[in-house]
Length: 292
Ligand code: NAD
Image 1 (cartoon, rainbow, N blue to C red):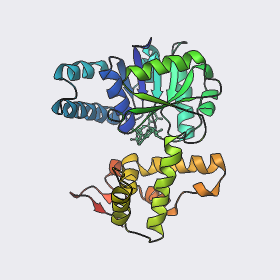
Image 2: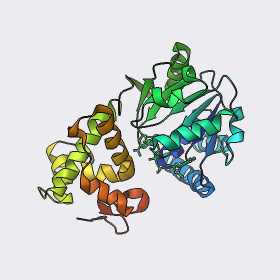
Image 3: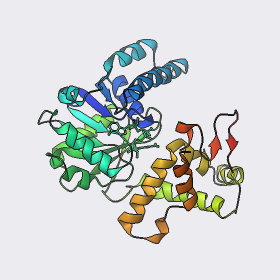
Image 4: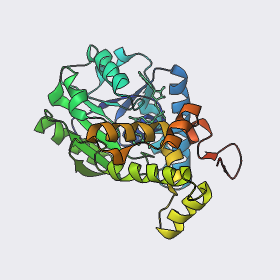
């Protein structure tokens, strides 16, 4: 294990929960915070459910699960983060919300604590510059679902120190993950490639080239993708996909990244994918029904 003992996770959404889950199973104490206390409770229940599934599949043993769950504590107040050696922010993909949470967090932190963001696309350098410790700030970008996916992107901001990077490498490796280093440019590597493909799939739907079903079937059977792009968009969250496209569009100032108006419309409707039970598919039926 690295010199890190206690990890704080801010944001008890699908990613924050997965990150707390992975940290706890790897032996770290984990604190879970969210602006909405109900999300923390739901998060803890979700983590227990996912660990039970891992036990059922023989991936972990029952004692690992019991010990892991004991290591995760609800932390509705950021003051509890004074115990943390590392804090991983995983709140909504919104630059102003992220800047605010780092500002609010600062007073609670010990001077040596490392700050990380799980952002999918936002500048690590820009977020770091708003804190009192840009040298101790890094991007640690997990993939969804964090307990399952092997890759973690590590993104150094302009001011990230070698020590912060080295400690982060040790930490990520101790979670059993494989690292890809990415430079701090909009959406890094995975989402620079993946999300424009998803956006193009939405354009394909918008322009009537194919139905939801035809588009997903085409990429699954025609390109050997495990999930169709629209199914994947629902899995990621359509709000997150749209935010990433906006960061690419603004950050690279290239019209090829313009978000599809149909993606914007789904987000306006609050049809954000699986997390709201409706996106390109309606998940209230089994099997899910395409919504177009
Ligand atoms: P989500 O919508 O499931 O969860 C976001 C959580 O943040 C919610 O529980 C919300 O209540 C909470 N939140 C919002 N503002 C907050 C605040 N000010 N303080 C504390 N909590 C706050 O989103 P998610 O999919 O878990 O994404 C979270 C982050 O992870 C984003 O930056 C996203 O880009 C990144 N990410 C997402 C994926 C993915 O596939 N969804 C993959 C990798 C990284």
